[in-house]
Length: 184
Ligand code: SAM
Image 1 (spheres, helix red, strand yellow):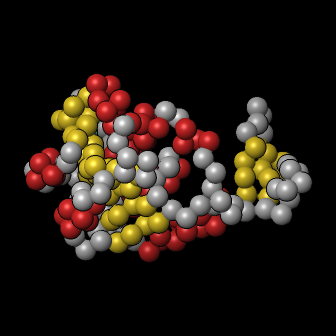
Image 2 (image 1 turned 90 degrees about the vertical axis):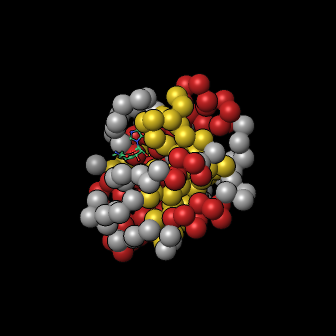
């Protein structure tokens, strides 16, 4: 399953911390790229440093118009719009798991009415308002059943060795010898 994410809405740049976290969750939970209509260069820089250190090739792509990207992607992917008004994820997750390529749409502020019609699926993660960060994380976890956490991020400079206590990090170059370095 190839996963892409688009965050729609205005003032993404002013909402820097949330925007960065939507991008970080997308990357860590197995998406290939995120499309945004505004991109603060600092956010691009943060994500490219994360890629350099922790591996993978997650992309932030600027799009002039979210409608164009959704219409274009709809030719080959299913569009999943996350909204508290949608069908409950508990009822639909098996259907979503059977899909191939998907584009997940999350909002920032008020979402235009037409997105509900363009979407193949309008999905709620509970019928209460919360956040695009949590809704995205839960959707991506449900449809991949946790497999995303076993994913390799190629060309990482650092790799975490899960530890019961403390922090074990293998540095590039020592990975072949599997030498763990303990950091504070
Ligand atoms: N009032 C906005 C609206 O008209 O949709 C909601 C904005 S909310 C802060 C930002 C985004 O979080 C929403 O567009 C949606 O993608 C996501 N979200 C929030 N609560 C959700 C829920 N219960 N289920 C699914 N997605 C949710």
